[in-house]
Amino acid sequence: MSVNYKLVRKKNPQKKSEPAKWYATPNSAKPLAQKAMTRAATENTTTAPIEMEAAMELLAAFIPQQLQQGHTVNVPGMGTFRLTFKSEGVEDIDKFNAGQMIKSPRIVFTPAKELRERTLQGISYENGGVLENKINYASLADYRKAKGIPEPTPGGTGGSGTGGGTPGGSGGQGENPLG
Image (cartoon, rainbow, N blue to C red; front, side):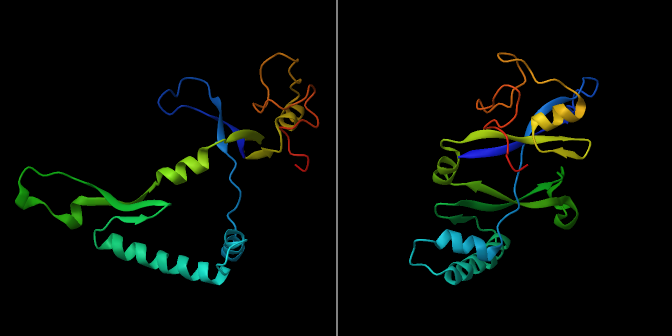
């Protein structure tokens, strides 16, 4: 399975004097609508999509209730949800005020080992373009063309990182033919 990424130029916040570098960031697609997701997830099963929708809605209502009661919620095969927060400290225990000193509550999800392994097994990466100054270039070749940067020579550096591009950059496997 191939995951798309975009190249984005960023400065290291701890080394602001250094020039910005190019980093890969996931090129996330919009999530499926609930009905489309449940249809796809229940395909070739005896579970009806409406049954899965109902189960997901019940789980979505159950998790916050359990977290607010102080429980950790384990969803078998998926992972664990837990509530966490930051707190200020006091030297005198009698001076602790929860309403003022507990801050930044958040929900932490830890994926199950099986989910993590199934997701990451055999993953590869494919260049999905370049994002610079809020301009989205569909491919590295498009970025080079717009900036007047020549294509690298074969055997040089600066390829798409997919290992499937062709010299000249047109029609390579690392490029989206529609984008």
